[in-house]
Length: 445
Image (tube, rainbow, N blue to C red; front, side, top):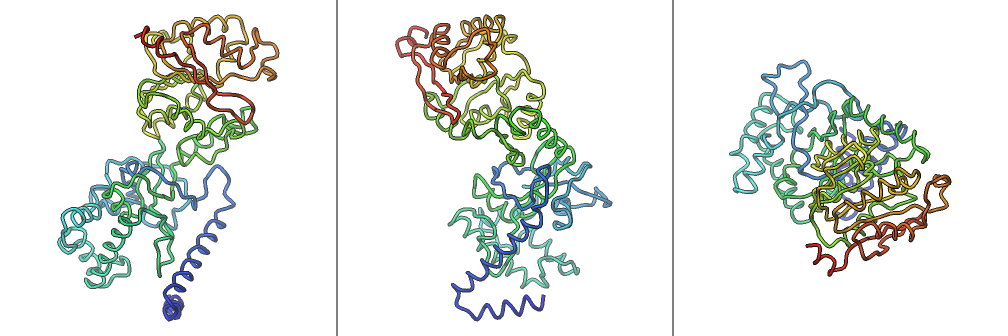
């Protein structure tokens, strides 16, 4: 600490601009070494230096760790894990992720609301009074020794609020000056993939009160059951034919580093393209062969009520758990599309059939089932991705179409009258938007 104080005194003698550059170099160097420290980790446990931007509204509950303490007397403020550095990167079992304690019940959040929304004095808040009581009793909090120190700390809170309000929320180390800590808001991940608050209550309070949509977070602890799920996904990927890659990206940030087949599709670009071409920005969507549910997540974000049909049990189990973790409402169905009579009774604004229908060309029974499905589905638009006829998987197929022939086949057995290529994948496949002209729509309505 003496060396640090001496160094700060030396730096303080330099021009302000140079001071800021030096502090920036120090913090970025510290962060680089921090990342190197954890670089040996396998893909089973993501690097604790990773920073994820997640929806602010997703951080609702506190980590609920009591340990050997009395749960009746343990305050909300003390329920997160007590030592951030000791727990960082840990995988822990137990019920610390079972919590009904909300972040918005913390003294700090309430104090920021009173200060920001009502102009209350810090000294009049329970937050201020409780901290003052604790430091006067000898507790070590932010190196504060008395009320004057606490007042200076509250001045910093006011400065931080104004900075975030005026400049937007930035990663924490870009906000620092004379403070070389780089911790972001810190969360832990529970058994079901939920984010539980650990540290950074002042910045998160400000973000929530200002209505900031996304905040950067670092993950400290993961529940053992969540890590087992992550390992299952990795094992599942290794069982596929893509060299350990998934067919689709997983939308949960803590799973987003698991590799997927990005060579065939730029999934995010494809979704942006689809969103530009569909007429309605909300409605009902059916995804046939939904795989891991990527498109249902994105369509639900647009305002659609979605149905995801996936026949493979292992794929479905991953999709459903990620759906729950991401708090999505779309209906996930583990069944063959041909067995769902209820689907035929519904009307869909959009049907997705991406890289799925060619499987139904391989046997005569499936081919006839596909025709029956197309003739009975009530839909306004279809996004269709056909296969390439030279693919090895189609060598013994009952029927094998070129991309254009497959589009013509679908239009023959539906009421679609228009087809348009809206996206071309890296592997040569196209995505077609199939629709009806206005006259056909008017007759149908």
